[in-house]
Image 1 (spheres, rainbow, N blue to C red):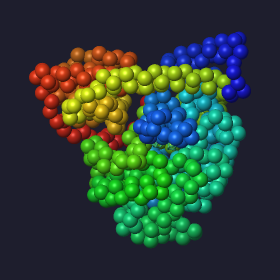
Image 2: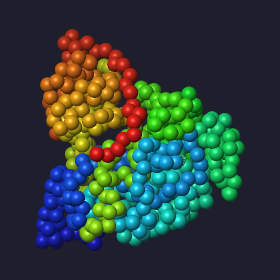
Image 3: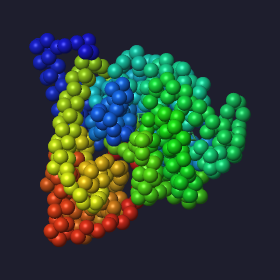
Image 4: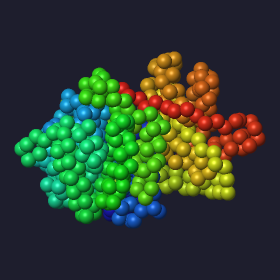
Length: 519
Ligand code: CLF
Ligand code: SF4
């Protein structure tokens, strides 16, 4: 039924269901479910023309493997894997796996059966949820029975959902056939080093074949298993993403070599994430005062690794039970007590029809960007600027400055607009009133930007942003981000040429270190 053409009556019914779903989602309310609260709590940049058709099919609606898709499609995680077989110095076992999750936030653990119910509940409420990932709270492959039983149940009940896995790679070679058997098309391996001497500074021990190894021996086993697992996966055509945690003073320079090694073994995407480290996390690095990188240090490393291999810049280091678009967290709507009471209506036709509408919007966005880009042709300026954008999804500038929990960062140049990252911030506007301290943290987070695009902004923050040298732009409310940013950039270049504004280099910005907990 999934691909069957619709008759008129059926088509009208489906259209009306989809409109209803669109409306409910716009209002952030539950859909097709009963018994919940009824309220929300609240990859790569390569596009279709750059990729082989079979790869495009795999990534086009995966929010982590396609930067473009992350504006439109959601993922969810189920926390079915509590145990881990290695120790990372940036991890505190009280919390989720820090390789795919921020320290300081712990998820509610589920059985495979509870996980399957949760996936159906989320899929019927959020029809643009296209990917189910298992990413912790420990290591999924240190819990193989629970992980693969969950995949089995979900592939039977929800065949349109892509399956995704994130692992430290220690036992990966033992499970590659099972991964292929369950058609898990996307696997992430966290690779922080390929040199065991550097590894010894990151991993105090690994537990392998009933024995604990420490120091260089531990790191040697880990790197050999990670590289072998990566080769085995890519030989089978499984898309592999590499996550690396950038730890200043330990592996910051070395990650360029890691990038070369994983690229040579066929990895599709490299995601270099900042170390999140604070004493209150109770990790070895946090307690020893090891700092994370600044925004510009992270960007410089990502830029230097960007060559033939795609770099991921939109990772949100999400928790092991994250639900929603990257950058939003709707997990509080789907706690076990709530999902167990929900009556789930899993309707493939409605999901497909909704996703077709999303695709239309996405194509309109791509076309608008291409048209605007044409007007930049022949532009010779070598000026580059960063701009921050407040958005709640759909690739549009549709968030009020005071309601933004993060800003997306775009680099603008004569080549166009390129997504280069995001910055989490404290909510500036609490109950409609501005708060000076949080404005300072917002300015610190986007201090390297020349402008900030918002749907709306109050007079006070506007003045303070201007005083900090950041131009608040609210003239493109609800328009597509890239199209608007390119249009603004053209006018910026004109103003620089006319002497109306003086182009000046901006300073660095800070990456927020505290753990994020969904509202
Ligand atoms: Fe989850 Fe990871 Fe799959 Fe994505 S997350 S298992 S690949 S579905 Fe995505 Fe989250 Fe970053 Fe992971 S933003 S932490 S990269
Ligand atoms: Fe923690 Fe994940 Fe490292 Fe295991 S692999 S120690 S859960 S960060």
